[in-house]
Image (cartoon, rainbow, N blue to C red; front, side, top):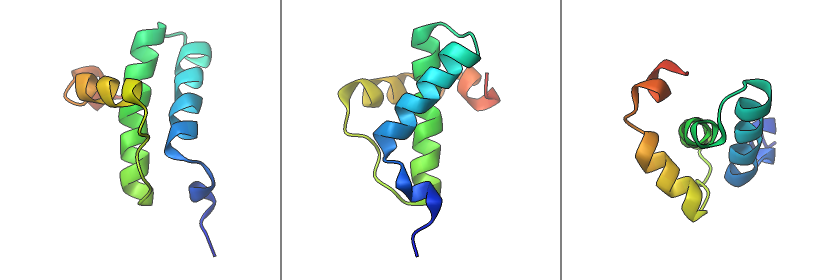
Length: 74
């Protein structure tokens, strides 16, 4: 039986986290997307699913993976 976490693809999770951080969290779009990329990477590693192949996601993840805001969960 498949875990409910695997129902979301990595890209869907990324887009959902972007929206939550921007709309619910009040962050500016670029920051919301960068932090969502870090969230998505952690989610994919934890659940054993593939990370999004989207170029924007990959660039944002590289830019934010060592950012202190990402470590602190901004």
